[in-house]
Image (cartoon, rainbow, N blue to C red; front, top):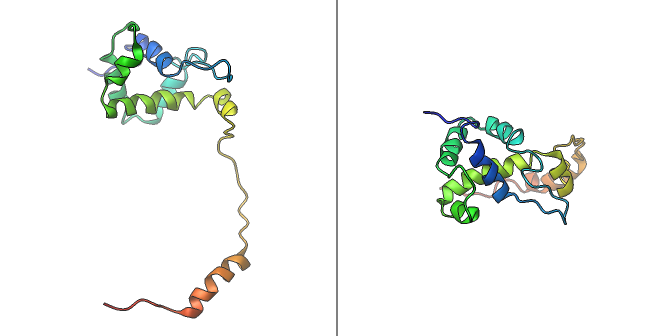
Length: 137
């Protein structure tokens, strides 16, 4: 049976908060402050439909309610499982404009392309003049 995000909602709530508790001193919100589990996480899962079922199956194996030491439980997962959790949970967090702004990451920007062909040719001409330097084997 394929899990859905609604099926594992309680697990994602505490998992996201355990992995992204936020830092008020630095101005970074927690996962629950952003309601990440309801908006950003589904969007992140939508970007990788090939990996989303594996993520949901992994999350379904965690307890429904937050354990006393959630990070210990997360750290007990295999390296590949932790990478999968991190890919989606951190990826969802980084989809938030408020977070990327705090990080100083402006996102994708249009950069004008105006190459200096004189500079390119100045670098290439000595190589062309030198000619091939490889020996046939």
